[in-house]
Image (tube, rainbow, N blue to C red; front, side):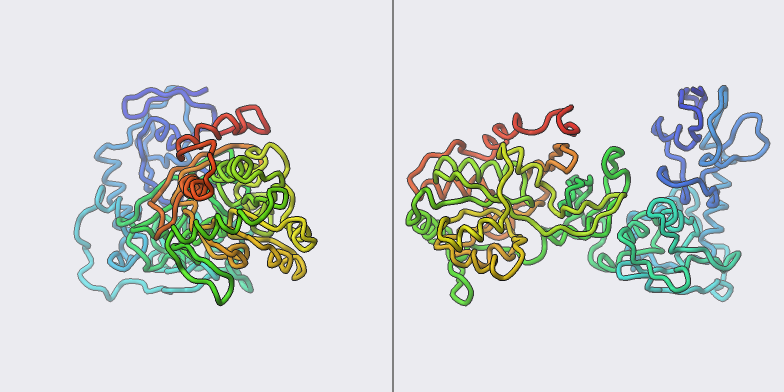
Length: 509
């Protein structure tokens, strides 16, 4: 361990800890562009210079390791003047793009200008400014503006060190330096949007988020990425009921500081193809109806089917609370004994974050049911054989392979789907009942490692969508049946002891 003093405050840190990390542990933020706790040290931006006793020159705190007895000062006149000079150098050729730059409002260059420079340029003419590439398309998701770039090389190091794909390189020298894509390559790996995320300025921007919303309008809510079974921690940025992006939320045990591109874009699961009013009828006969009519139709369809020919479909996309509520309703109110599970089809995986299971809560379904649910293709076979005639289903996806299996679902006499979005399962339902998206209801996911993670509601449900417990309570009244719960709060209380606890399959977090 090493004991040092920073701005008059003592701290003891592990050997090898840098001064900038030690200062952060004390709550002292040393300005920086190039340093990132998950990347190697570049020490090229020189914004993090600090005074160290018995050292004649200012030292880069991102590179300087803590030593016993070291005395560091981070905010002396000499340090502030060095930062002011560094800012003047960085702004020398920087375009005044702030009014149109997507990074405005969360840009380190803006923040540090207000803190350390805040003076007019000494250049009286624009003629001497170096001009570089603007709007250079690096890949399907990322655009590069070389004039805004401060050459911190975070993006280069991220690709090389984290993704292990050195697709970005530095080219040219001096004030003509810029970032480029390696010859013959495109920035198209599965984590390309993280290059825009680590960029401290507006040089790399997301083509999906460009010009969509100013960041100061966005509310930010902690959530769990719904894109796969890894359970990455994230922030959902939203405004007036619309989601605009997902950003990584640091969790060293799960996703560190990163999200894959599919995760960043998973906010679309809230925005796209939403069911916002109840609907009755299949295909061309589908029509929007009031809740009373939809529930009456659903109840009538389910009543016609004998108890031993009813089944329920749980959803690996939905929270533990929603799945438990539907399973409890199906058992107690409908007498269901057969449970199936639906979800998105498996996809690409890697060793960094992406899981092949593209559903956030398949493990949670097993915990809520207390057993392994049957696959959806088996339901299709049973429906084809006439053994199952009525189904109450949760979720939008239906990964049923082959047209024969899909045709089996069409043979059902009663299919009532509760879903936030249109999809293969609701489209073959006789009644579609809108429910909240992942952003509109609090809940819990259990990831592939068996860790239960709660997430809050970010915004109210869209349109006429009802939370699943309330929806099922209304349906139970239509069926003149009693439920084992009366509210979402009672559902949460019932679910809590069923969740994996610390030490069980990885433990809850």
